Image (cartoon, rainbow over all chains, first blue to last red; front, side):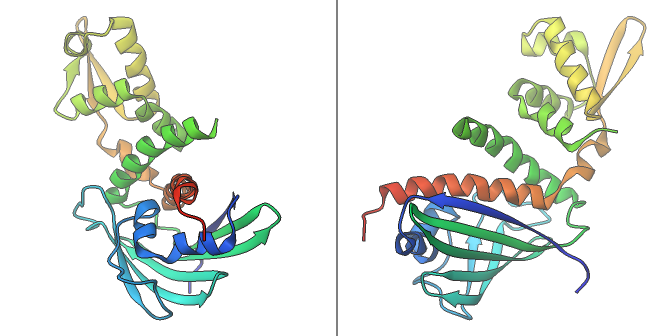
Length: 141
Length: 106
C-alpha cells in the first residue's frame, strides 16, 4: 500500500477496563458517545456495521461510516475499518489496565496524503472544527 | 502564506462566521455590513481584516466605498482529515468520560 498516515491518542479514564469495553462495544452505549449505529448486539469478529453521522449529508459523503471488525480481543482490543466518503481508514482501540483505571489507546490509520483536498471534506471539516473546538477548549481549560 | 489555524480562527468567531456567510450571498460594501449586523464600523472592519488575512475574502475599492467578497478558493485546501478526526475523537472522548460516569457499575 502506498504511504499512509496515522495518529494515536491516549485517554486515561478512571474506570475499569470492563466498563470501558462495554462503552466500546454495546450498541446503545456506542450511540451515545460515538454516533448512532445499526448494531443490534455487540459486534463480533468479521461483523459489518454502520455509524450514521448526525449532520447534513452532502454530495461527497452520505454521512454513513462503514465498519468491519478486523480484530477483537475481549476487554483488550477492538479494531474495525472506518470507511466513508473519501476515507478508507482503520480504527483500533486498545485497553490497558492502570492503577487508576484504564488507559484507552486509539490508533486511527490509513489516511492518504490526498485525504486533505476534497471540497466536500472541507465543509464537514468546518462543521466539525467550529463546533467542537470551542467545546473542547472550554472543557479542557 | 496562511496557516490552517488562521482560517480556523477566522471562522471560529461567530460574528465573523456570520459575516462570511452573509458574503456568500454576494459582494457587500462595508457600510452595508454595518447596517445588516448592527455592529460598529471599526468592529466590522476588524472582522473583515481577519477574514482577509485568512484569505477567505478579498476587497476592492470603488471611490470611497470598499466592497468585500468571498474568495472561492478560500476553503478548499485546508481540510486535513487527520486533524478533523483528531478533534472528532477528542470530543468523543469527552462524551465517553461523561457516559462512563453515568453508567451503572458492573
